[in-house]
Length: 162
Image 1 (cartoon, helix red, strand yellow):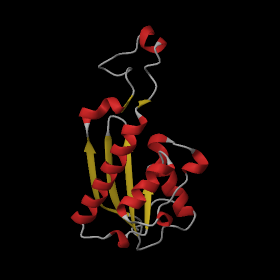
Image 2 (cartoon, rainbow, N blue to C red):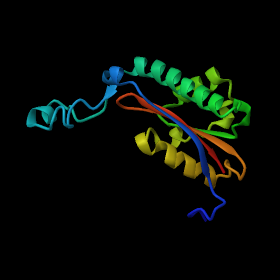
Image 3 (cartoon, helix red, strand yellow):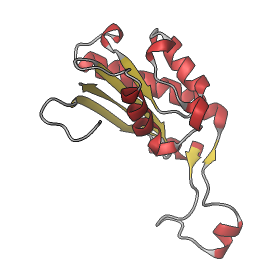
């Protein structure tokens, strides 16, 4: 059974977080925040749903997640071979496959569940991490890499040692 750490649990050994606000129009919710409060017109126009320019996002997501991974590995003097499991944001399989290829990390070291649940947005990494642990893909002493990309153009990576 999973539960609170008793001193022998996971330890975050590093994080890298970024934001590219200048590209926010590529993936955003156009209205509903303080800059464009909710009005009947914004609701009628469907401006409270995620809007995405898919081709551009694909390229940016792969490039930025790769850069975040390379930077965090370099910062902690780790190689990709030392990562037991990669838990990526589960936006779509094509992004995960492209990331695997560009980083030269075999796809079988990535935990993938987007085929079963779809893109669960901000919940995708916690859900995948829990499922990976329950499936025995994460063991004591392993270093796991978490990597995400999201709206507003935010992205980042974290290293966790178990």
